[in-house]
Image (cartoon, rainbow, N blue to C red; front, top):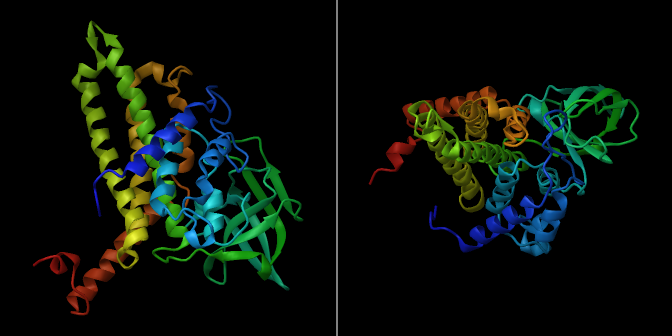
Length: 357
């Protein structure tokens, strides 16, 4: 992995920050902190930059910048505490689905039990509730399980048995015996190291990383000028030490996220559980760093001027998408146990041993 700063990445990051700075933020203390979906306010910025072509192969007219570019876009969206209008189209493109759809039920992965699919003649019936990016989307890509495997199923807006609920945030969609057929199955959410689910997990990890980084930057800035008893908050050990630990956690998480993206782009045979581990780490980092940032700002944390309440609500809502952190860590642990047993049986060398000269 080349750690030298890429000039293209630097310029892209600057362009994203400049564009997202012009997107109005929802500073109200109540209600939804962001607007998601294909028609969210960040969509204009991404369209002007041609973000939909970043990961698309050059053979079909894309820029072929790889997953690293998609991870960068997701991180900057989280850092600005704006809605993520990128992930749905990126995942749909990876599975050959049309753009403009909304994702639903991905918070229940890897189990996929949020919406159950009961077999019926010619297909299945969907029953259950799931969070969704945009309830007004014409098509929903719903994560569920059919035949023992996780799949994405396309459900049209006017489908029988679909009941929308938009009075809460994140929005919730309920299904009551909604019929779908085998033709509605968009693709399988398997554990392929470079498959659509692995790539989506890395984008989500980057989004969570951005949320944590944005909250941390606000806390550091506020603690730098706010004074208590004649001393800056940032000079008090009770404030500066937690902020320093948060910085270490952010850098470690950023390394894991971008290493995972680089492996998917350059070393697909060595990906392993890197996307799963990056998402689990990012989910925990987002919750911990946002909490520490709010504690550092004290009673000012929940004011509209600082806007930390948006990061807090985003971290709470986004930390379980594409897999509960505890379940993801269990996947990583199970993989490590299998590797260790194979190494003990002499069928596979441990990574440490293969790295020795």
